[in-house]
Each structure stands twice: as structure tokens, then as C-alpha cells.
Image (cartoon, rainbow, N blue to C red; front, side, top):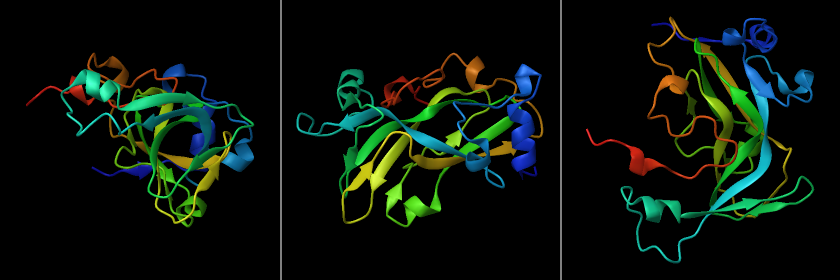
Length: 198
């Protein structure tokens, strides 16, 4: 199967597509000329964070819903406030934009080169966005640098790359009853306890 990455012209057309099932939704898209690159769309940092709290846990048990639920604390900051991410620190944060991926596309969230050169990683492992997903995406931010980073809501943090599928999936993400993060509107902590054992 050939994977084709969608380019700027096709992204722009899909953002305005009259057929709702084909439309890519990224809102608010404040400045399309600045945010749409040759084959990606820049997304920004929102004000929703989840900060890990390690003092009360000796270890993470992925099957313990209460422990996983208490692993992070939700924090909201205003658009004029700063968030300091210290060296070696990991936090979850939401995109400012609400995103909907049509069922005939898949998406990847990738770091921007300028942030990478400062040591900021935008996802630990979860860079894939399934066909049919809608909601605010959650960044997995990690400061691999040696100095604290001052982050502000509205900063361009990552880019979305879209890929054409050879066909629409039998069951897209928004159609699966076990989808854990669809329709998320803030930074979401792990729901790994909902995974079924195989």
C-alpha cells in the first residue's frame, strides 16, 4: 500500500470542502498563510495542561484506574500567562485548535524543527491520529534541554501531516465504542486501564 502525504493545495481545499465528511477541521485557524506549510499545518499550544504528581505513587500500575487518574493534575493557564517546562520535565498539554480528521485520511503530529533544536519534544510515542478523530490533541511535552523553557498559549508548537488512505476504514475512530480520547477538549491523561487484555 502506498502512503501519500497531502500537500498544501489539497490541505487548503479540504479545509474548505463543501462535503462535511471530506472536510479537515482545524479551528481556530488564525492565519492560514502562516500556518499551512508545503505539506503540513502548524498547530499551537493551548492553555490546558496535566502535570504528573509523583510523590504519592511508588510505581504506575496501568490497570489501576484510581492510581492512573490521580497521576496527573489538571492546570489551566490564561493566554497571557507563562508555563515553565524544566529540564527533564514531562507534561501533557492540549492544542489550542480543535481538530477533526476525515475518515479517508490519517494524521501525524510532528515537532517543529525550531523547537527540536532547543530540546523540546512534542510527543513521547503518540504521534498518530486515527481517521475519524475529533477534539483537541494532547501534546506529550518533554524538555530534553539544559534550561527551563518559557511556553505561552498561542505559540506554534507542532505540525499536522495528513495522509490519504487507500479506502475508508470499516470502523473509524469516532465509530469505535472503545475509543478513549475522541471528542477531548482539554489535555487528557492516560486511560490505559480501559485497554482489553489480549
